[in-house]
Amino acid sequence: MKYLYLDLSNKIKAVYKAKLNNDIIYLNKDFKIHKLLLDGQEIPYRINKSALWQTINVGGKGEIYLEYEGILDGKSGLYPYVKEKTDDDFYILRNETLYYPLEYEMDSKAFLSHYLYPQEEDLFKVEVQINDNRKVLSDLKLKDGAYYGFNPVFIVGDYDESLAFFGKIYHLQLSLNIINKAIDLIKKANELLKAYQDIALKDLYIYIMPEGYGSFVMNNGHTFLFITEDSLKDPHYLIHELTHLHWNPKCNPEVQNVRFFDEAISQFLTLKVLDKMQIKRAEESKNEYIMTYKTYINDYAYSPLPILEYGIKGSGDLSYSFGALALLAIEERVGEAEMTAVLKELIASDKPVDFDIFKNSFKNIDDIWRAYFTGNEYADKLLKASKDIE
Image 1 (cartoon, rainbow, N blue to C red):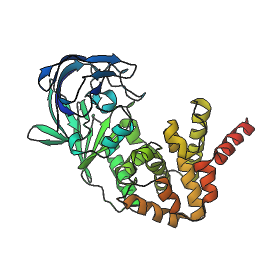
Image 2: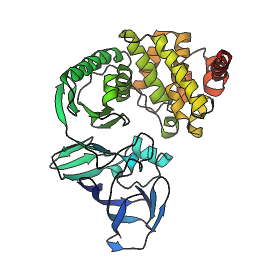
Image 3: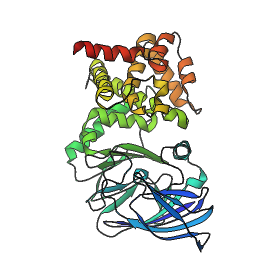
Image 4: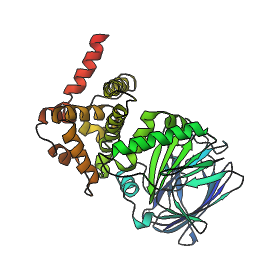
């Protein structure tokens, strides 16, 4: 078990204790180390700083004891959506900010393996002290004054709470009208999503964050949805995040990197739910996906690749649009009933899904497979149509 003590204010002071399986750990590049012991002894260690993190080479394996402190300044996170500042009224602590040491490089195969399928060695015990009147909320279970679970996330802010049919919503003084609209939408969406997996939402805790932060889902026995205020108010974003709770198939890290079985399927299900709720017609959502794909290719320097190459080329973001379009093409061929049945079977499976399993779940889609998954036929068609219009 890993142990983490956090003393929180406008800075982070921390103590971390764990058994190291590697001789390297990764930490936020701006944090200052005060003390490092290995098996109870002071040792020489090397620090190499990069644009992303600092790598601490302890020169061996064993029990590490690390005291450190630092601030989040909005620029030390690993991705554009990570804007946390510890001197703001609200901030969030998550692994994208490297607020605690990681043994594996972020997004590496080893990291994803432990993140997606935590093992006993990944279990955390976290004790937290907050030095003001704000609340600290987490995805971990609170027991006897300590938090227990995997992949610890903490948010700090002046939170209120509201009861819902599925659990609780924690918010930063939002109006009851906004909260009740969201609860009603979630209830109706849940009923429609039961067609793909018959799960009634319960033990769900929604943590609402200010605009500008990235929404995400965590699961530590209970389910936690971290969502921004603007996303809560937007039916597309709210339903999309809901689908991540229980309606994505399991897959191994290599397949996960393609982002097809989470993001493409979530976008597809969101389209279906919005259409059935008469909030947005399916054709309108499809056109938005087409425009999003063209924007990524034309403005964000992405290359038009077959879906099966997204993982190795770091192009998983394209699954949000092009991956969803591929699913729509398959459904147009096989029909809604068969698509629903296949997705239902894959989502319910305990066995990790891969692209062979997915393809073999359908008949007569070889041409679609070539056009979207192994070749660029449909991508070229979309982009050519765009140029012809110009």
